[in-house]
Image 1 (cartoon, rainbow over the protein chains, first blue to last red):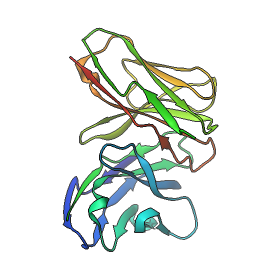
Image 2 (image 1 turned 180 degrees about the vertical axis):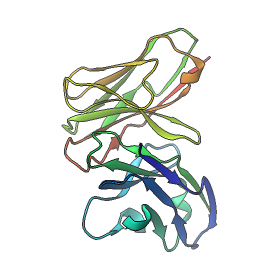
Image 3 (image 1 turned 120 degrees about the horizontal axis):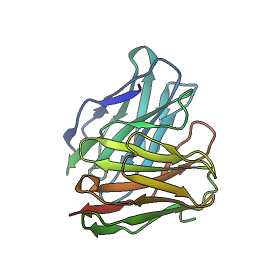
Image 4 (image 1 turned 60 degrees about the vertical axis):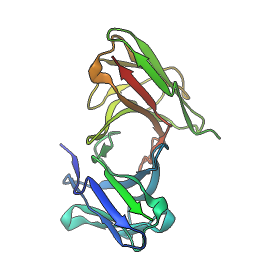
Length: 114
Length: 113
């Protein structure tokens, strides 16, 4: 069965610090990978996705993620966080041959101190 | 475009009561989904509808039923609410073609006493 693991449940950073959130998945086949973000009081929205091609994906608001197939990882990065990045971040996977089910990680709550 | 809309935004039920959560999308998507979000557990799929006229169970379907009323609307029904169903419920939609990026509604906060 597919699963998604996010290593950190809570992260606290100061503004301008660099961010890296870990995401690993378990599935042997070809996958589509996503990071969604949920800002306080808002619904989930897509931050970035990997479907094919360049494994370094750039998303909105300066975020990027790198797909490392050999490590089954899709870590999210941002060089310099802002207070407005305070949110919960979810990694998600759907398998190319797995039908319509997208599996979400448990989420990482990021708090950025001003 | 309103995107994905959900009603109600909040609801308090007593154990054993029933209710229906409504969801509609105006993006002409074929596929729709219902998730529940619980602390520390991420989003778990309750039911999905790959296309109009079809519905399938997800990871946690027990205690729920769904209806794909038409291409736009996908409702979730709790026939006899239980405290374990206290959660935040999200509806989402996507195209049927991969990668199936999902677009989420604002959520419904449900408290079952």
